[in-house]
Image (cartoon, rainbow, N blue to C red):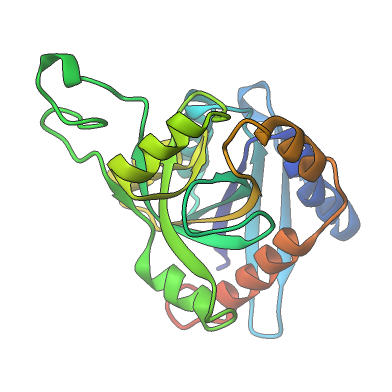
Length: 238
């Protein structure tokens, strides 16, 4: 029986390499929630993975809804890749692992809670440590750190500095913590691989658009090789 991997991708341009790959190897349509998706296989000499990939749309609600659908459809592992703003300790063009996730725009400070704290529940989510260690067998020097997530595109130095100082953020995006939330409470392993498109400052919009429209496949190439590592691993492969 194949390991079943769900892939959640927000943006149409970020999803295009998945679409192209699926079309090159053969696929079945997978279009729940009025979204574009593909079901296909990735194989190695040791085994294969059944892939359910879904272009969820931008933002936390879209990402969380898509993740729950993938879990309901039997996925064993949830993966994500995409572009992020760089907050601290990382430069434009670098690829990183997000190992910790927070929703920076969840705010009950007005009634006495800490920024992003959710009453009576876990609110800091972690990537699966075994998936992190497995990826690092391929790229031991990859940076890893906290991803903060909110329903806004960060393009302001003051906001960026707040995210750095308050949360120790390495990167910011609009989906990863929502996926992390669903995986944490569903007790499924999750890993997000991100490429830094901009510095989350005043020039972020142009830098992001330039990178998002480029044909650079480095992030996707790492992602596919990582899936093959999962297939070949003793823990996840079957």
